[in-house]
Image (cartoon, chains in turn purple, yellow):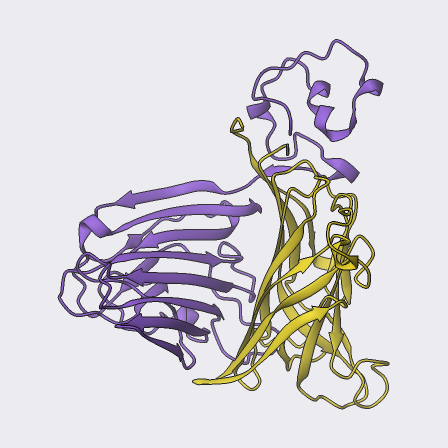
Length: 238
Length: 215
């Protein structure tokens, strides 16, 4: 829109408005910020709805990432996070587990998502030598993770997370890590999969709504200064 | 150049009977006064047949912008397919004016819903209402049940008329978009080994406008 976030005052007839960019004039005396959830019409009858609402954030926590009581208000979920641990060796890929309990999971999903499958591929670099890899079928999404002071960032999108009747709960993950040392490792990892209750169930196998997300790695000693997350709902209210 | 604070909005969603069972979807008269337009499609691939034949096969997406994919546009990109722990094959898309990408291998027939053959597609176009030349970025991911492979596409589609010669005039605004699904063996689903590719159960598509106004 070309309108600022000010109250509007039309002062002329609606018939002189120029398409959608002047649509705000049809709502005189109201703050633009109040035009939510279809309050503002787009071209061709489109109705606008605000998206990417911040649901939760946290940082500087030690141990594993543990997000609970995720609001079931949006259709899709986007989680941006960093993960690290304090051991001197890389923990390997770090699992991101829906509806799991802290410290109780290994690299397997909980029973409600036992049919989940995903695949990953990525590329890494070390002392001038590039390397690429492809995973086998994975039951959970997995972050590259980091250790010590490695830089690490991830974006995970989960579709239909709040819909308990939906078998289509696919996810997409982008992950990268960097040691900051030109003789050591840097790499990225890209994955896609679906969170299923059961595999090969005709008619679909809806998995429960995702109420919580917990990470897991073998060391379980997350390094606070290098851990944070932002959780967003997007794609419309349910 | 002043920065402008604005909204991210979602609109134009197609779900349920508006997309399930349909071979194509189209958005028309898309508002163009966004800094960026994103197109999201999340769904399941489905092959319809009544002949009794059910052969897993490649599943394609044909994309058109402004009613055209044969003039003024070139698609380029890479499709990468993995099977189990092995890199299976890749296809470099270059100079493809049909706007076609290989979404993945589909093994879901009729409305049988095994939860697999799920995919996610995104298209991004910057300043859809500007008079400048523009390209659409795309990415897709497909998780197949057969033979347990995933396919990824990353690429771009140039939608101005630049391909006719350097410095030629740019195309007009971007406000119309259509994707059509196509089986490797397309045709009449009543005929043996011919299939109709459609969006399966739970599929959903929507538009997303980032910011407002372009200069």
